[in-house]
Image 1 (cartoon, rainbow, N blue to C red):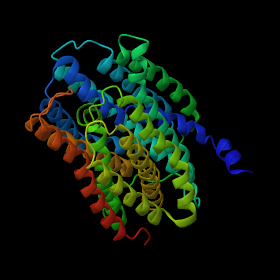
Image 2: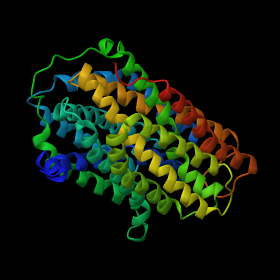
Image 3: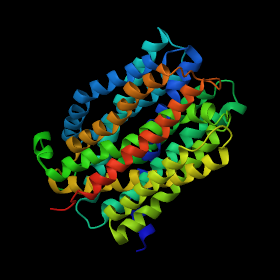
Length: 412
């Protein structure tokens, strides 16, 4: 049986579709939501950052609990996942398609809490199901990751361009996006329904303490925290950078698509390279390329759209490696020490979202403190701060990630 035939027989395309929906509720929301509420309702960037950071503190308790719940779901898993998907869709509609029923800041907080709580639970269940699906089959986690993360990156592309692309068709592009997302969520749930099964061999839930006692797991979680933060930074500041630093309003959507399309199309390539050369050396090469791309960004100014488009392709390709290889490496480790996967991916989800908390609580207030306001007219000091935050901070963090990965042994 061919590789494609095997993947289809294993229903990997269902994972592609579900990953696409989940990813649409992740990074694109951090790209659009703060700017949308700042532009539409005049909400302070510092206040939005405080709300997002408060939610991350809530995640410290919530995500491990959600992982505990996910590990104990067996025969009724499909129904519970469906309920989570309904909350996800309803929160997206409330965030973008409903006029705030209370103060916009608190409405934002309420909707974003529902959205990301559902997102966390579904993500934990989804990645844990991948462990149950593949087990310890050689190369299985990288193969499933290629299908899953290609879908995730495709979903990011679609969610990133949709609000901009819909401008010419409706007066409320974000509302149209929210309703379309809700419909896609229901379809993805239907296609994944048969997959929500227990592992073929019953496994006792693994306590968090036992997972964290594993040295390789701790190093992978630390690496994920440091390595994912540059993406959180660039995603949150992308729209501001294009509009204000490049002075290129209207180019946000095409450049976002270029960035995430490069990530999506590169994912199968990174997966194939990892199967041949190993995940660690391939990921190190991608990290070095990312540092070069961020370094080039430091030299750009108003009007440098073409150069930034090339940077979007290069940096987007490196994100394809990050989002494909790191989860596969972590899933492979979980298959050995915590086959149920729920608690492990609860920690993974928590670490991933803390990178966005870093941006929310530190960088947005720094940007606003430098005199930056959403829009094209900003003082040079504010634009200089935006450039440093968008390009210099990710470069430093990527270098730290390279050092961590170099010193990390992935097998015991």
